[in-house]
Length: 406
Image 1 (spheres, rainbow, N blue to C red):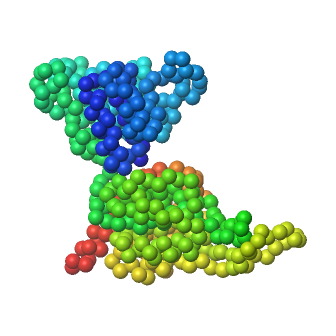
Image 2: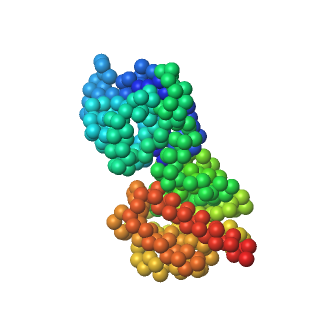
């Protein structure tokens, strides 16, 4: 999950470096935007070293640099890719700009351009904090849905005592989690996940595969890690980066994936099988490239192992979640799979529906639970779908625990 951290010009700007580290430890990817005044208190190089990313300090290319369209509209790109805008410390000046819609630098322009949630952590002199203009700006921002982390009271850099000191890291992190609706309700749990396609070799240069990008499975892995779980991700070939805090095991074929699942299944409290595993593989693997030798070729296929069913037979007290990508009779096929595979939850979708399917950032799914609950979700981002799936896992786990106690 991506957080854009805005750093403004106050003495507390140095604390933003510590905040970057804390956010990274929490599993967030952090991109930093600095105002010109912030650069007087702490250098951009510090944040570049901490994040490994470019630090944005202005709307246009720096003096002497080559101006281009990319630099001129960069605020739009940042606005679209961020999941949350956090400004810490937030000066009275930036609060006033946000409140009044003034966009004369990158950060204030970004605020107007993003639809992501916004959290501000003010830090300033106590009299500035208490001034009616500042309080009016804060009330206007709150009315627009901006989450304000009130400053702490204490001795301030100006020598005065009172409210105005930047809130502690725990309070800021708590606000971020609250706004993003992140919980640590999976602490102590181990989630085993499969994701991505498999590749079934035909000869040294060809293989059979499918259109899965792995995005849905990776979104569940990322969400589970953010909610406190230990996550083991068994992944077929994808171009995706491993989510923070996730242990990744790379495989290619269905048989390799099954072996990896069997190796790690014993550690799991919940197993989520999101991979698009090939149902069939070539029965005969050619040691040499198959040459074109006529108008037609007959390819004999044999069934791959059913990883979901194999794991479910050994699940014990574990929860098992399967996925069903369908093109017709979605509910009927999903309920049949739930029953025949002995799963606890099936996540089903019609891959032909608008906004659903492979290689998209959104999905439209229905959750079919073992206890008879069917939950149809609207079109959501795959990150949002991932959290809804985990919400259902938490609910089913609580129900299972209650049944065992009874």
